[in-house]
Length: 447
Image (cartoon, rainbow, N blue to C red; front, side):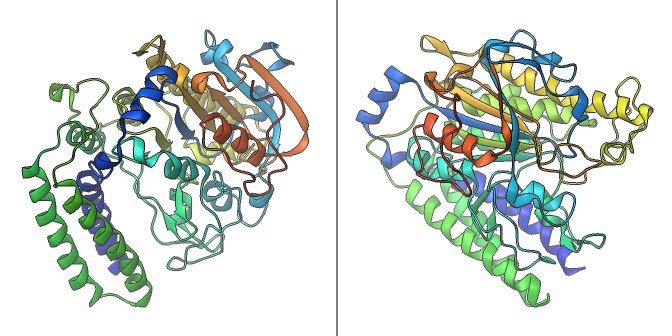
């Protein structure tokens, strides 16, 4: 019961506090030289859209190879964007080919590492996610180093079927092996965070200091009423809040050079809150990603359509009467496979919606999509097999011209997923010598 009392308080208050505190941490670090360089090249951005439960595998892979390919039935919503797509086939995440059906594949999706089996308090992903490697390199260029979004609250308790805490199934972004990043699920709060970033003032900084003070006090009181496992979580939480408090204090000081949003935000467009339907909720969160990139409030964003083992009911789609996780265990039954394919295709359509929205946003002589890389994928291939081999993945956008798009690349079986991530980090201007089990840059992915 202590967990149920603690998590809603800590997560909501922490996110509101982080939204205010993280709005201004990098203003003093902005430099005219950086601004000049990016006025020529344009900013480079990374988005990751994670879909749980895999896909109907026989309806995913495009036909043909190289630049001579045709989109599959599931990928058909991406018609009109073929020249901006890089579709790799036969990549796998070897480190997640272990343990349970979903949790290892979810938390290891961007780390390419095997998580430590845990019941809750001793989380360990054994790595930093690739998005956070980029965020740390680009952190001084925008007010928000990164933005983590989702549609479902963090799972609590233990999945007794596999012996893993559900927390693992709620995170793909890890700033350290033991620290998953909190996600916001309310589009209104995301908008308020972005609006505050674009409209900072000393009065709001003072309000934030008072708010964080109350959070710390509440957390200390709560710590005296919970067990050892929850106390460990609260200690981590307090450490984060103290860091945010210092950032807010620093942000309230006069700065010689300040960041300014690339476009103005209209407060009248603020969402009312969490919509009543899943489809509306997803669209609003994607709108928030587009707004964050358009205003250049952040250049790194992850979004989870659902947590691991998500059983969101997709009966709002014609011909679907099932929950997502339930139908992913299709047992090769024709009626379930048909529903499974429609659900995957719906997710691809939402991806296409975001891509078109970014493409329609002018930025210098190009557009926001051309200055971005947007990865769509799942941590397993087929929900019935729970295999992380030949993962369903698509990368869209040119990130300033580095990714070689308009291709379906077919690799040897068991080519490391981490090779793709190395190439993406290279394209972002945040190269690494090696990432997890990588053997080099993914051949043919970059120009």
